[in-house]
Image (cartoon, rainbow, N blue to C red; front, side, top):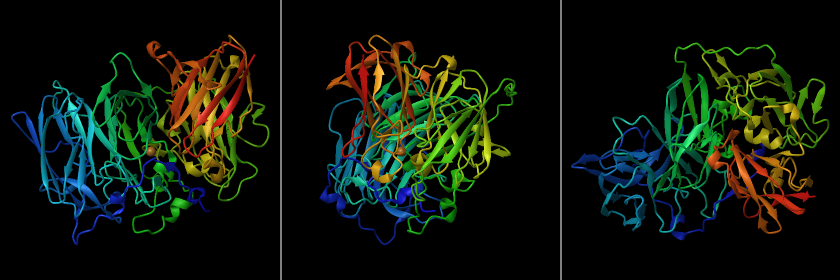
Length: 631
Ligand SMILES: [Cu+2]
């Protein structure tokens, strides 16, 4: 079966202008050293008398982001002088108050190096160190306040962070610890990178050979993390790539503790949590986050831009192994690639409460072929069977039916596969047992791994949603193809689903059109690019549930407008979790959203007239507008 996404679309504009100096390839010397993979566990350099001396050298090396024996590619990388080059570059990690002496040697042939991020964080000042080929430059500065930062270099005076080509991996994390931090840090530092040859025209063709990497490796070769139930886990995520990454954790919320850039970092107040299951990390930004693995099993932390977690061809240009095309059982290991980390959580020895099966509500979710599809661009949809009722009743099976669940009520959802290919369903944002998490070939653990559901087979998922909110269900098997085919929907958990009122509680599900050609120019809102008008009444309260399950376009903007005026709404929840009172504020009705995020808002119209809810996705993509008539 040919895959839909091989249609050569230019999928994401990065808005950068071509630069002649970058088009010149870096010349490969006769012998290049093999680049080491840096797990960012140990800081580089030596400290003496409160000053860290770090000697960085940029030179070419041979990088193997896949398996160590798989083909590699020649790129520029930073080394600690005298050691092998590393991707990501050597970790600079010091307590606040430490002085830094950075010595940068440019051993790249022909290219001047422009180094960013080697200055006192939080301060204004010169930020670029220019090092000509063969030259050495020294910079002295104070590390500045605690935070998660990074340094990076490029071979162009104007290029943005992570720009494509041979210089795209010249970056490393720069962590400043508080002066009270004790012992060896237990957090982990993950640098997100992207390599693509590109033609420097400002567009990235994701159909080229490319690599999305975490700490220099592409899934399934990224490091496997192991924790025990109850651990306190801290990640620092640094996006040195040229595109945004909505990072999603399966099974658990994580708290975003800080957001930063190469220059500055802002920690949230301790009493003001920012719990999410997906956090959009724009290019050149950092976050730090904490979470507690509460249930054992295999979990994923990955980018929710589906194109960033696709297995890509080897560097020697050979085709992908046949398993990749076959929708095999082992989806996670054969078909996923790129920005994925596997997390194994081990039991802590305490008995696990067994859910009471009495009174379990039973639903059937049938994945079915819809009309109008082709082999390469199939039309699929979900049908929800709840007792005698079936939703939707007829074609098109778009959008996926909203699954209404009661908070705290055990539910059994039997996924029935009537498709001609295997599938699996992930209950995105739901805190559940690993085995039911739906990553075929990976979820679960010792002896019981979540299967791909073969055609004409079924799988019973069981969970008890612990909180009311807005969640998502979607395949975790061949996501690009199957989600684009129409397989995605919202889960709305309520304290009392019997009182659900679809007039006042509105799901706004954003997805990718079935035909790639349409996807290039528009997005779907509730299964169409031309949503029907809705009616509202002055003075009544409406809950808007924005669900972004688009497969790419990680930077869409939702707005609620009257003519050209932005209205106001009240933020209620993020990723299905209620916001703390001080964050549940009235604000302009504009929300940037990334794939795998949900946002709940409350809106009360104050005057009759015509409003509209819009989704914009950037240049070249039609604004999708849902008219709202207020009476
Ligand atoms: Cu991504």
